[in-house]
Length: 160
Image (cartoon, rainbow, N blue to C red; front, top):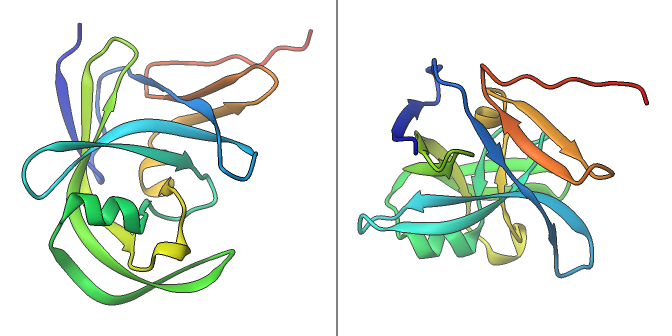
């Protein structure tokens, strides 16, 4: 069983790692790629959070539901983020996101993350490129595979 590895967003790691995601049936009947994690709350507890894997998102963003559950202090306010739904109000919080590797070891990403301040803005927290760019991201619906591959893992594309 693996241990704990802590990564700041700007640092890289030497260890090999793979995080497996899954297809999640959302309320609108659409299957979407997610990854399960835990996020450090203000009281020191870890809260379960599902993240939509969004390769088009520049940064990781917490939904209002998650923000409320974490009770984190605001680092920056009066901010805005934009996406398909337009520009919305947001704040920045500092916390840690913890993922479980395929060998059951834990990896923690420390950083400052955006959070939506209005309930209707974002249904599910989004894992963006601020974290995803550290991995090879595989989202393969026909093969039923969702995973993030770290430095020493490889994948191969073959023609059948």
